[in-house]
Length: 242
Figure 1 (tube, rainbow, N blue to C red):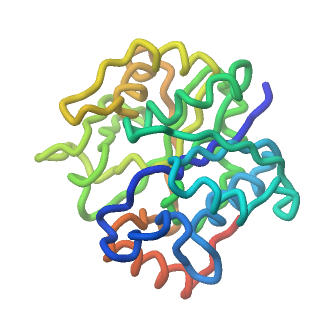
Figure 2 (cartoon, rainbow, N blue to C red; figure 1 turned 90 degrees about the vertical axis):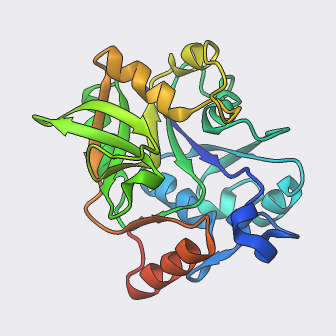
């Protein structure tokens, strides 16, 4: 089954303060590239040629000007506007027509990580009806969705728990079969008023269709001043493998 890429690059980037007053955070520099180049290069490096970028109305023109048709990046880019922020699952739902009959490899645009995604794609090809998440052990799991593992399987996922059951954070890298869009349509907004990606992953978990890979190398989001600085330090020390 074909695999298409999705980069979710919306949001206001309010945690970055003055840096995002006039630009989208995914256009800020991480190492020698604008941040959005990193997920794009990861998808292309995993053999994906058709990629959808989802962002808000304010800066979509900047992404188009920067990336164009995708030809310079050896891919074919399509763009979709997210009118208002409604959560990761809501943004993913905008890709339904693009990925109706194919699997989708989804990356949050502020995820900066060392490892190539080729291993994930190879593993996912063995279980094409499964959803896949990438996990990373972190010192502060309460900031993330947290996966509890037993005997090599995920047995629970909690969103930003006060008392995490493990130190395995669910990174912003997901691979879904085509039926993910049917489930997204049934979601109700959380207390935050958003459609939560953790609910999507939990759905596959409850149906014994959730698998994972662990990221061995570095990983960080780059959505705060501190983590943006960390991302730049990590990339300066060792460029990611695409």
